[in-house]
Amino acid sequence: MHLTERTGLAALRVLVALQLVIHGSYRALAGGVLPFGGWLTDQQGIPFGTALAIGITAVEIVGGLTLIAGRLVRPLTAWFALQLLAGIWMVHRPEGWFVVGGGRNGMEYSVVLIGCLAILGLTARPGGSE
Image (cartoon, rainbow, N blue to C red):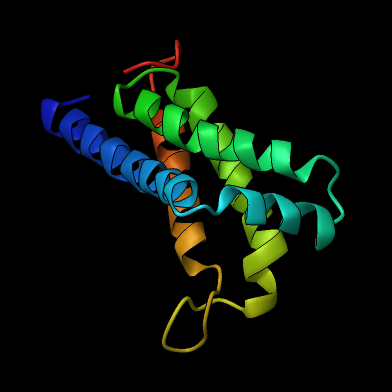
């Protein structure tokens, strides 16, 4: 792979990982973890929703920072893609495709992130680090 391709993939990895870190950090700092956990249990019927919400938030922050560092790229991109698929299924699918414009809270942004994560995972070195 040429240097410019590696640089482009590294930039994409950092950009996507920053989105995840920001998302998890905002949830943690804005007091959204407990409401998220309650929603998982009360609305989605998932047991131990608060523990799951804490874990998801921690992985978004710590895993995102790990991804920025170029470590564990394959397993983290797979995890985040699965997490986004779950979000599509539970939250965005009922709202349709568009996030704004033709709709609200749809799945288009998550699909783009999943595509980016797939590219990063497929092009990562076999050891999972960059």
